[in-house]
Length: 144
Length: 109
Ligand SMILES: Nc1ncnc2c1ncn2[C@@H]1O[C@H](COP(=O)(O)OP(=O)(O)O)[C@@H](O)[C@H]1O
Ligand SMILES: [Mg+2]
Image 1 (tube, rainbow over the protein chains, first blue to last red):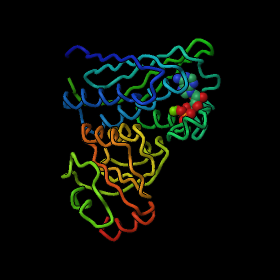
Image 2: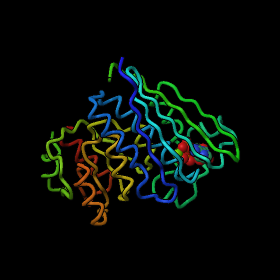
Image 3: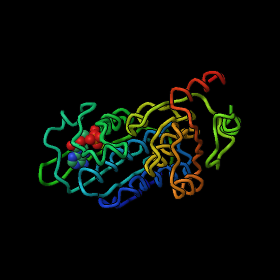
């Protein structure tokens, strides 16, 4: 079994226009590794939603993508305000995004639900005033 | 149908065509980015009135064949350049999304 491969990104909390760069880069890296295109699609959409959330709700953070032989793990960590009620935040349509954010096409309250939908497991650890860490896994076949 | 064939239709104009041979298998209409990522399928057209830079990221991640900007929406020139660089096909139409969808249906999609 080969060792895991890790990609690490800093997600800038100020720059809205570059938001998504980490996800687009991950998509390229996974494609180079020959990962199945549907797996890539699921990983990169889930990661993009998480990346955007770190930008609009948490002032940025870090993203780690680990490629294991049988799964791809995404860990998103921020030191933003945290999520008070995770069950509520997970509901489709629930959003605290501002009108400015909405005018850009975000803030539909579908980000966390999409992350759950596209991944095989998702775990949210969040403490108000401390930050949020989200770990997602997408199963795949023998990448490395 | 390929994106090139679609863009040659009189109701559609190509704005950026870095990947003209991509196959088109359907279409999705929406302006809320998370809805599009949750619902649009790969290799389909995405019809929208949004033309900001985030549209390019979503188009790339959702792996759509092309973005059709409806209602005569024209993106800034830097968006067009970025689309070409990122391999994202952009097409514009003066039709509203409903009208454009009718044309697509008539074309057999
Ligand atoms: N990293 C985060 N830090 C703090 N709050 C968050 C974070 N991610 C999500 N949230 C909260 O959960 C809500 C729902 O998130 P999401 O489903 O992605 O919808 P949206 O981003 O469109 O508001 C957000 O509006 C926000 O209140
Ligand atoms: Mg979100």
